[in-house]
Image 1 (cartoon, rainbow, N blue to C red):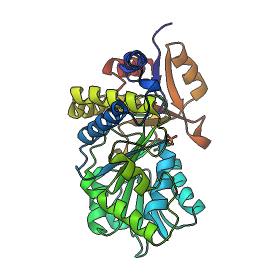
Image 2 (spheres, rainbow, N blue to C red):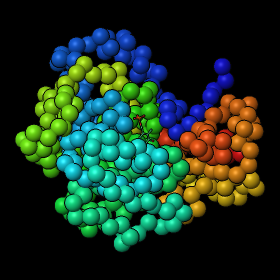
Image 3 (cartoon, protein in one colour):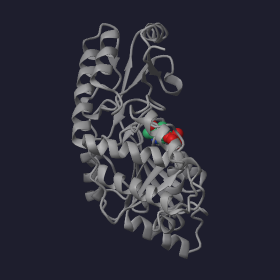
Image 4 (spheres, rainbow, N blue to C red):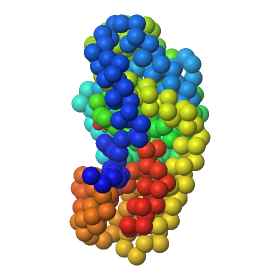
Length: 355
Ligand SMILES: *Cc1c(COP(=O)(O)O)cnc(C)c1O
């Protein structure tokens, strides 16, 4: 089989070291390990400390494992919102977050961002009674990205409110200042290049406190996966249920690989590849970047439109390249191209030449 180049935004191309780690895990008996054993706890501990270091998360923030990013949205609403959440609506994933809040019986307030204009904190007004601000930092559905400075400024404007940030398709690239954020989450099949089925949630001490307070008030914060249960189990590097040890083991190893490479290098390479790709799209006779305003363009999920996408997919297929279709209603008129750490400069150059 010829080498495949998979640029779909998720699941995406596996990180290059994954096959070797998978095999090593088999040889070391990781997939039959009791999750209450010392060896499993050691793995979980190492995974968590690696994530802390790679994403520059303050020491006193908690990291817990869930089944997916979608689950993280539900847990965040249950554990930190009593009445009302606020949502920056940038596309399908932001809408899903807001929908989950509605389904859990919360009131929601929404602010629609303009995909083609700069985003100014001045325009964002959050009402007094909204407890949590939800932001999809990198909107995988359309290639819009929230500048990290906007998030810090929003925190300074509303220091008492909690801020939750979806970094599913921008981690580990996105240089978020975690001190301005209470919760951030991702699943592993995007920027980490792993098989799907594992979600990671980062929780600030005060968000944890809020969940304890809601619990004391007898509000429903969920059962085995509520924050108190997750955090207490993690104090001894355990999980409330039998966890996805395969996923945790692979994540721990890929995070260690990324630490060796250095996050700064990953960020620089991502910026370089994104600049090349956007430049190629701007020069292109038929295709154009979908997001017109450069300040809110994603570096990690590049969306383009124009032309007959069926032809384009066929053209790529002959070159062993796969790009993502548009999301939802834009299935046939957009393409989405992932620019993750697994995608090398050579991969990106190949894609650009084939455009
Ligand atoms: C993929 C994605 C999700 C959902 O991730 P799951 O692992 O399928 O739950 C949420 N938000 C964003 C921005 C995504 O790209």
